Length: 256
Image (cartoon, rainbow, N blue to C red; front, side):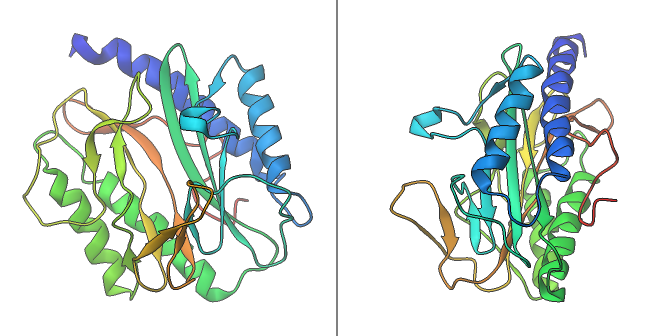
């Protein structure tokens, strides 16, 4: 156990900063603001709390957060795009503190969103939490993917295959890949000390995605709505720990 206690302590600090950043942004993600404004607030909050924004300059990425709107699956680049009534946006934050990473994302609704948007968001969050609640030493990675896939497909949605969760600690992305689809009792066994993300991307339509010319933004091929949530987690001796839980108790919209 002592082998990973120090790592977990540092992951808690980084994860807490990522979560607090999203908490802070919650009241600022509203009608009329730009995604650049959201990015600026996130950058300044992380900087002012002795952290670094991991996406900034990562493989040439030019912003501090990812802001993915409506049919954007992931890695949307903040811009002068103004948030409009009915928009659904995922904000993905990764903070580095003391060389350790905390990675988390949440969905936000702008004004009044249609029922089909709310249902997608609810299902995406529930699928992530169902998988998280299974975590313990000895569980197979395939069980994580199977749990998410079977839950969302029963509701008529699809799981994105092109992107997945990942190991994370002193490196942004490291093995193993955490697929959000799969078969029961297959893949690597979880063991105490492992740290990784679970971050399902769920589409109303088909799971196929395409990349835009900027080389980062992934969108649904059929232009259907997409949603995502993400937590950074660690496997303990008899279960799991979520490093990126909201200090304000926020989980999914509406954030009251």
